[in-house]
Every structure is written in structure tokens, then in C-alpha cells.
Length: 422
Image (cartoon, rainbow, N blue to C red; front, side, top):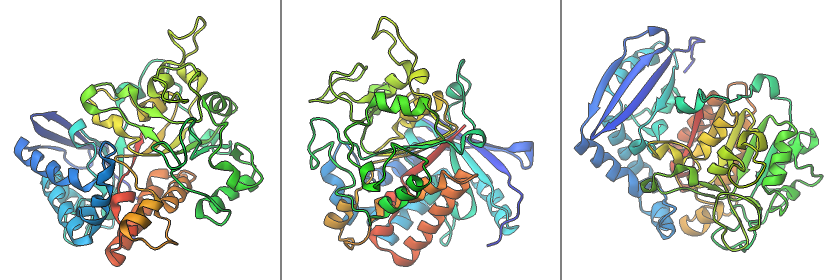
């Protein structure tokens, strides 16, 4: 389908009040807006269908079920779920406007602010028609919380002005006190120079745009020196982007404390920080990124001064976007935006590793779905229009899923990614 250069944008906002209320408004009032309501019963039914289909970090033993039995394991079951989600969450009036644009060859941008209860809904996958997904007819991103975007003292960094600066990469860091095969062990496994991600990283190394500096791309993985002090120095030296691949421990939504989400670097337990130490390791929490050393040292430094976040950030880790499930989003995504990011790509749920795809779901040994996804997200962040590039990748993945229908192409992985922009 050939799309015109016209690019209308619609803002969709949702609110929980027992029932789910959805409103939409088109930029420039090019189309009429509207309001719709999903009853609590309809909402509960849809979420009850979605929840067992996605991996849950709190129940790691359910991953085999998710990859082999649940709805994302087969195309027909996933497509039926996607149609149910569309019937529940896509307002009829908005669907009619999107269809009218589609018939004219116009692909709009849908910017969604989901309510906490529906933060894990994969909007890209929902199927308003038996032969069509929402991602086929629109670019989709999530709206950053306005309270964060307009917070006093926030200093956003422009991609246009910083795009030539280095790429800071933290790739599968070695977490002190944890073996490679443990709960906070390696997410990528042993990396060779011929692995897809190694070849991808080598291109940045050849351009001298990579931090840390390496001559062999395999030297980027399982490093012991990429702790919070190193990260702060690298970011203060100037960066265009940050890509993190590793472990995130998301806060439980029932706690109401999204700022307790933790990023696992190579920080040792004696490091100063707000998070509790575990074994020989102290995680870097969203609270650290927001507050720095406030109340921790006699001469405190604010988080955005310690870690000035670049324009674009990729957090490729389990439920790294989990703060959107909170009424007050102060988790890792919000901390990155508060620190200066314009755009953050994160995951809605736990990401299966390549080893899990192979051992649990029978994917071919040569397939590397996770590594391929990392390469695609990273490449999209180099594009002038990162949202469009990421959506193009998801459209390609959707097409492969429809044609191949094998677990390596399942949206259990690529459907997890959402991009939050200011």
C-alpha cells in the first residue's frame, strides 16, 4: 500500500473509573473527536484473556506454557485474541475514521496514553478486521506522562543536535554475585563474533561511535566494569543514544512504588544507592536516576546531573516499561524522560531469550529472535523518525508471523515493545 505524505495524528487517552473511558482528539481538529466506554465486565473479560498469554516475571516457570500452549504460541489463537482486544478497546467511531484514512492511502500516527490497567495491551496487534492489524494502518506510540515532560528543571536533549555523538551500550553486563546461569545471569549467552548482535555492534565500533571503546565486538558483552559510575561518566561525556540489554526488576503494581524498578548493572553492593543490596550487587533504581544522591551523601547531586540521559533510550529487558502500570508512573521509562530523553523504547512484559525459544519452544538452533529484535530496535533508533522505523519493523514482523506462523515469529517477543515519546 502506498501512503501519502500527509500524516494526521490522533491522541487517545484512557482513564480507569471502574469502567474504562477512552477519549480521542485529532491534531488540528482535522476530524471529530469522541468518547467511548468499556464496561468493567468487558474489561475484565479481555484482560483475563490477555494475561495468561504473556510471560510473567513473577511466575518464571510459566514461560514454557506461554511459548507452547498459550495464545501467542499459535497464529490462530493469537489472531482470535487480537480480534477480541479490538472489539473491546478500539472505539467504533475511531475505527471508522482510521478505515477512511486507510482507503485514502493515509497512515496516521496514533499516540496512546493507556490507563494503568491496560498498560500491557499490545495495541499494535489488535485486529479491527480479519485481514488487518492496527499496526498495518497506523504508526503507534505511547504518550509520556505530561507531569514528567513538563516537570520544572527538565532539560530535554534533541536528537537533531546530538545524533552524531557516541552510542552508549550496556550489553548483558555481569551482575556481581550471580552466575551466568542464575536468575540475574546472562540473557544473551556466549557471544561469538559471528552472532547477529556482534556483527551489528561492530559497525559502531568501526565508526568510533561506541562506548565503551572496543576493538573486538565480543568485548562489549558480559563486562564487569559497566557500573553506575562508568555509566555516568559515559553519559556526561556526551551521547546520542543509550541501549541497555540485560535485567530489570519491575516493581509490583500493587505496591504503588514504581520508583523501585531496578536496572541491573555491574554495581557492587558497597555502591551508594537507594535500592537494597542483593548478594554482592546493588541495583540502580529509578529512584536513583530521579534523586541522585539526595539524602544519601553530605554533598548530594541530582540524578539528571549524575546521569544526563540522551535523546533516545532502548531498555531491552523484562518489563522495563512496567511503570506505565502505575497510577503515578515514576519507573525507569519516566526516569529516562525526566533525565532528558525524548523517546524510550521498553517492554510491556518479560522477554523470552533465544535459549528459551530453542529449548522450550523448539525454535531452530540458528534462529536468534531476541538478538534480531535488539538489532532492529537499535537500528530504528538511528532513524530520523524512530517511531515510524520501529513500526515498520513491527509491520514486517506481523507479516512474517502471518506467513510463517512459527514461534520464532510470534508477537510474544516483538509485540512486547512499546515506544514512549514526549
